[in-house]
Image 1 (cartoon, helix red, strand yellow):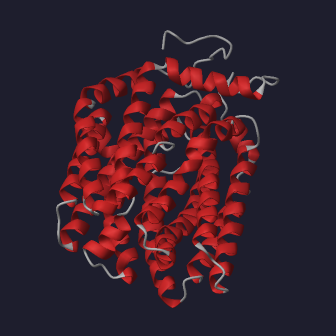
Image 2 (cartoon, rainbow, N blue to C red; image 1 turned 45 degrees about the vertical axis):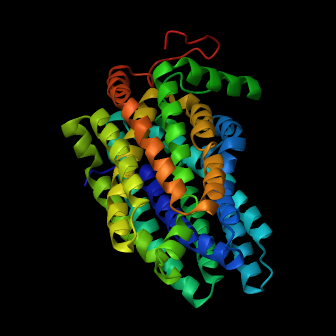
Length: 422
């Protein structure tokens, strides 16, 4: 296995701890919600609230990530998640938890996720060389899959069977460990890899710096196209999956105690993809792998909506998660090549505002449509996603050729001029 710097390995270790906590929460939160209410709109609101902070806060958080100590910012986010999980665990154990308080906790988790994801992504190009990006992202996704889906998820389901408050307490401990590991990353390691001219303007007004990040993304036509495409696909996915827990439990009659196991089995596809993503990209081309992954993933979601047995749903889910992992690894490597690191927080925040900010609306709309039938939103969302993927195949090939021939990371960009030529 390829070796990386000690600083990146500490970031990776922190990701393992936080992904374990994420996995426990991913299974336990929907189960706790179903215990409090079975209304489809309320269940879909859980998904919406988890994603809504991307719409509201991603741009200012991205701007902060470009201006303040990123290591501390990331550690604080994990610390807040630890306190929130512990509070929900206590409320559950004392029978004081209501659906309203759960909504609030999910919103806090979502906001901290914006901070953690944005800040961690700004650190990756600093800790890895350009030729290490695909392999480094693959390792992070492998850790996410194994720990979140195969350890955290089943652990959450098992602990929920013992007492519904225990999984949240365990998640709290996981986030606390992650915060501690982040603080062990030497600041010097982060500063050493800055390219010349990479530091932000010292006295640039905060709002002006945010405006520049938005303008840069808007004027970068290939990146703008990619963001708009993934925004529409993300909306369709959340529309389709907002009430998937009800589809599995009520339509396919899955026992709640097996929910975490199903998530784990489906996650096996992501392990295979994480191990082979860089190799597949080298052999077939990044654009081809990205286009094939998105198109087939949407088509399989459409097929899932028509299935009546849990076994084919789980088997199809293995392939879907694997293809989704190919896409996530390779699209992040593309962004990391296209975006100058000193602008990464702002541009990452801007694109996530669009891509992830629209997902809550997809979840809420899907939850409403599911009141007419739990299969309907899955079929409609997946079918529309398939059509969008078909229309963007050629674009993906051109985008990757553009990303791999132009070195924007090392280009010294004047933040006071327009970039119409991009």
